[in-house]
Image 1 (tube, rainbow, N blue to C red):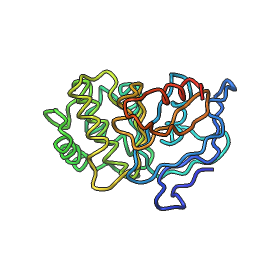
Image 2 (image 1 turned 180 degrees about the vertical axis):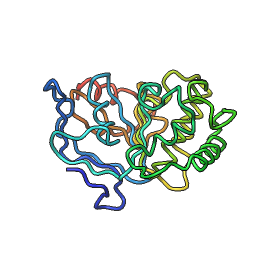
Image 3 (image 1 turned 90 degrees about the horizontal axis):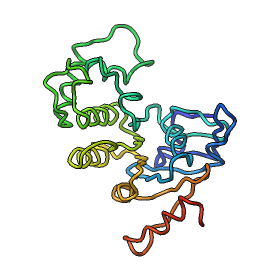
Image 4 (image 1 turned 60 degrees about the vertical axis):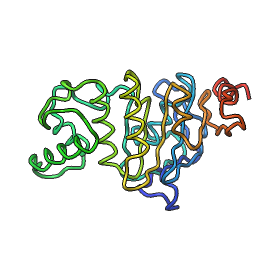
Length: 240
């Protein structure tokens, strides 16, 4: 069962005893309960294949649970790790790629002049280096493509954002800018779920951290020593 609005105004995203079984019958998530409040950044860690991919997509609305409940806003921004496969159509213009964010919701004719103007405003606000809104998305550098995806998802879905390896393949400068845009730029305080294969990156941005291991998800308390990575390593390998 999926509801469009959380019962508690403070909680924006939540899973309640949610499980997900894939098309091969493999349980990818097993009885997961968690919540994310407005203004909070929940970090997600785990070795590849531990269930984090399914966790992120359940929260983002890209998958539905086999059992249990998901509570989320009507629109959740999603930054996938593979932007060219899951976030952009390189041959289409930036204006057209922005319009894709409303796919399935638009009715009637598209006001392309308005979409182009919104694209132009967004490019300037998020420092996306593009000459004009009609430029094909594939003509941008990798860093600017990612900044465009971040800008679009933050713009169209202000309540909640799910980010999956958002700095993958970027140089240090671009990665720093992307992290800043995800966490800091907003007139409101969205609920953010942030996953990266880089543990230090997650710890840098997250208020709380959960670890995935064999489909189970549990919170990892912050150690007294902020440089101690042992609790996180143990949680990711199921040692505890």
